[in-house]
Amino acid sequence: MSVDQGTVRRVARLARLKVQDEDVPRLAGELNAILGFIEQLNEVDVAAVEPLTSVVTMKMKMRADEVTDGHRAGQIVANAPAQEDSFFMVPKVVE
Image 1 (cartoon, rainbow, N blue to C red):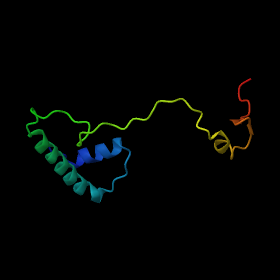
Image 2 (cartoon, rainbow, N blue to C red; image 1 turned 45 degrees about the horizontal axis):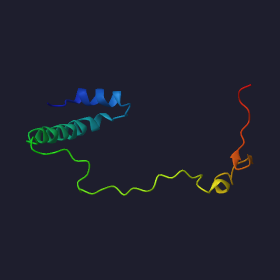
Image 3 (cartoon, rainbow, N blue to C red; image 1 turned 60 degrees about the horizontal axis):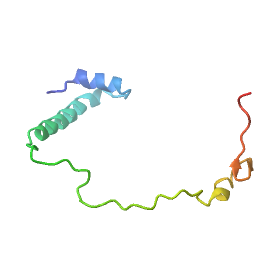
């Protein structure tokens, strides 16, 4: 697959990118290089490779699942313009 200058302009317009006319040939070359690399990757035989979630096999560290209030209610509402009993007070918007 080859990207021409018209395709570069169309992709730039769809992505809402402002591309100068003098940059279009360079961008077309860069996109063609990227697509060429992807075509090389498609040629690699990965049939015997198992999918990975990480490159290092290790168990995730787990913490105890305990419900707490965080013990920081006072710090959280300290900079609030209005507060009451560690809750944010906001003006009524719906009557």
